[in-house]
Length: 164
Image 1 (tube, one colour):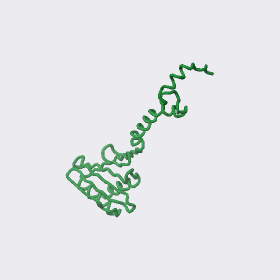
Image 2: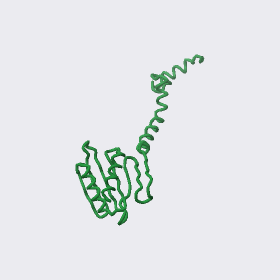
Image 3: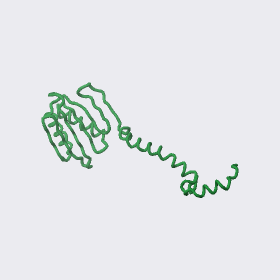
Image 4: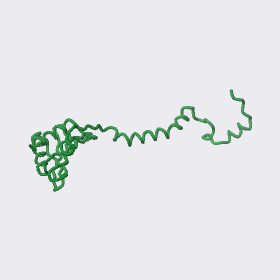
């Protein structure tokens, strides 16, 4: 038990603003929460910046180091095929037509191509083609905002089938 405080101390304490008095108007829980507020802020900021990096699943299928390797990272499927850009672009168009996806946009240049379609369930399908060499093309497929691994692999398989 604490000894009683001298009257002079009480008088000095009463002249301080209410906010400066120890514990005035605050219970122990609110003082404790004020002390942990910076830690909570740091934790929230850390999670907000790290979460996009932690949520992507990574799947790598066995294959050749160059063409044929498949990687699924953060909702995007990436692979390479041993074909020139023009043939890969035509194969992607045929594959999407056979799947009866609605065409939104298609563009092609000498170095890359972009195909944007929608499924019957209104999922956005984006296929990007990039020329690596004269006989090697990189394919990147994203379905929806967060990705759909199964549909992406199906599309890649259809494109490869159309290339044969």
